[in-house]
Length: 92
Image (cartoon, rainbow, N blue to C red; front, side):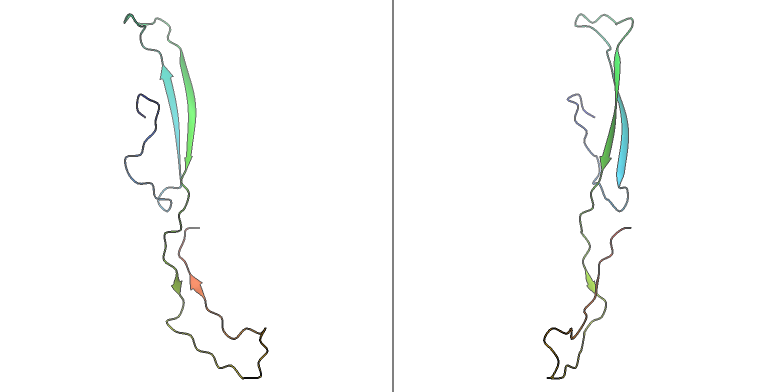
């Protein structure tokens, strides 16, 4: 955390590696304007929870390289003629 109170990451956040982070931050008075040490400094604590959202960055794959179906001409138009299946490796 920088002096402006901004929390920055040093490395990219990857949902598949770590999906959340928790921090406890404490701010404490250390000196007055004149530079004198405060005998009984005040402090405040805050909890910060960061959830990393998963971006679907995986390329979907067909479960087969090719698909084939024979369809009789008398088949009803509302009936399925083939099922194509994709897989997408995501966490969880």
